Image 1 (cartoon, one colour):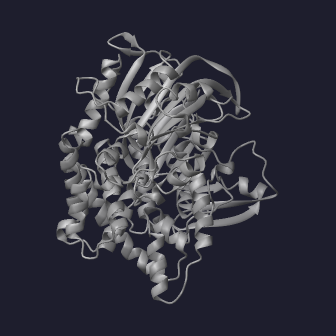
Image 2 (cartoon, one colour; image 1 turned 30 degrees about the horizontal axis):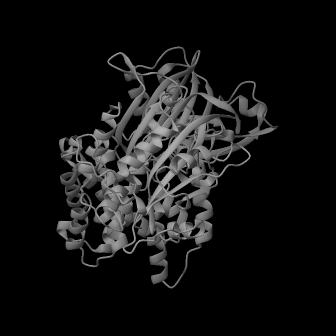
Image 3 (cartoon, helix red, strand yellow; image 1 turned 180 degrees about the vertical axis):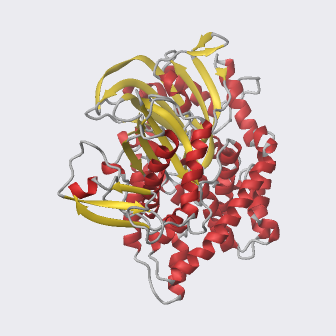
Length: 605
C-alpha cells in the first residue's frame, strides 16, 4: 500500500466518524503575540492546534467543530545526528485526529485499533489491515504526579491480550507542553516488523525489541486531562481532549514490508537517483542527502530562504550538510543537489502541489546556497591552514567538524573534540529558543564571533538611528545572539520604510569603509565630556572604556560612533561583512514593545 493510499484511507476513515478534514498548516509556525519562545517550525501534528486544544473554539464556516483530522507537514532537527538510520527523518508527515472536548479514551483507542487492523473494503471503513497479533501497546504506569492509567489498560484489553500491554514510566508515556498548561498520559502502539514474528514477549523482551528496532512505534494517543502550573499538576482540565499522531513514513515502511523509511514508495526513487550517480556509494551518506534535500525542498516551498538567522539558518545547515555528504558520495553531474531536489519534487507533486508550482524557486535557492558553501569551504581551508580552532571554523565559516577532523588526520594532527562539543553545546543552549531569548548584559556569548560582529553592528545602528530620527533617540536595551541583534530605543512613532532603508544604507556604508574600531579608557568625568553615548542614570566606575569607530588616525574627535562599552568588538567594520565580504546589514523587523519604545531586529545576510 503506497503512502498516498494510506493518507487517503486515514482521512476517509475519520471523516466518516464525524471529523472535519483540514489542510496541513505551513511548516513555519505563526509568531503569535503572547506566545513565549515559539518554535521555529511545526514539529508535530498537534502544534498548530494548541489554542483549540486549550479551549479556543475551532470555527469552519462560522460553525464550531469538535472533531478534526489532517495530514500535517512537520520538521524536526533535534534528532539530526540520528538521520541516516532506519527510522529518523527531518521532514515527515503526521496523520492525526483530534477531539476538542468531545470524545475521550474509549473512542480514541477503539478507532486507533480499528483503523490499524480493519480489512473492510467499505468506503470510509477501509483500514490498514495490519496483523493484530503483531501489535504491542504501552500505557502510563503512574507516578507522584498522576495515577496509573488503568482506564486505558482496561479499554485496550478488549482488543489486545493483556500480556502485550505494558505499563511504562512518564519518560515514555506522558505528554506535556511544559511547566504550565495541559498534560496527560498517552498510549503508544508498536508493530512487529521482524520476518518471523516475535509473538508474546514480556516487558523486558519488548524493551529489547524496541531498542533493536524489531518493533516500531506507529501511533500515539495522547489523553489531555490534567493541568500543570509551575511544574505541578493542579487538577483536571475543564475540557478533556484527544491528540493522536501516526507517522506516515513509518506506516508506509511497515505496510510495504521494509525495514527503513528510505525504501518506501516516496523515497526509493530518490535513493536510486543518488545510488546511480554516486562514484563512492555509502548508504548512510545517501540517506542524509535524501533527507536533508527533501526537508529543504519543503522549507523553501513554505517561504524559508537560507540565511544566518533563525529558520533560514536551519535551512542553511541542512543544505550545507547535504553538500558535504554528497561530496563524500562523489556524485556525478547527474547527482547534483538540484537533480536530487527535482526527484523529490516529482515524487511529491501529486500530493503537495505547491512544491511543483514553486519548483524553479526551490531549485534556484538550492543551487545558490551550494555555490555559497563551496566558496566558504575554500575560505575555511585557508583558515584551517592558519591553525584556526575547529569551533571557530564551524561557527564563523560554516566549516563542518567532520571535515576539520579529516583534514587534521591527513596532516597527522588531531582535533580536541571535547573542546568543540563544549563550545557547541553552549552555542546550542543559547540559540535553541530563537529570537526571544534574554541574556545578561545583552550578549548571548561574548566568545562567539557572530555575537561580536552583531555587538559592533549595534553601535553603528545606534548612531545611524540618531542620524535619521534625531537626537530624541536613546538606547533602552539590547539582546544579541549568534543569529541576530535586537535593539530597543525610545521613539514615538513607527519607522517608515524610507527611514529603515536610510538606516540600513548608513550602516552598510560604514561597513564597506572598513573603519577601525578602537578603545580608550579614561576617568568617568573626562569620558562624559567626549560626547560618547551612554545611559544617563547608569552607575559607572571611576574609569570607563569608550569604543569608537572612525577613520584611521582620526581619534575620538573624528569618530562616527563612540559609546561607553565593555566590549568585545571586531577590529574593523569590514569584518561585519563576513568571511567572503558579502553580508549586508538588514532590518528584519521594527515594532513597538511599549509606549514610546520601539524594537529593531536586524541580521547580517
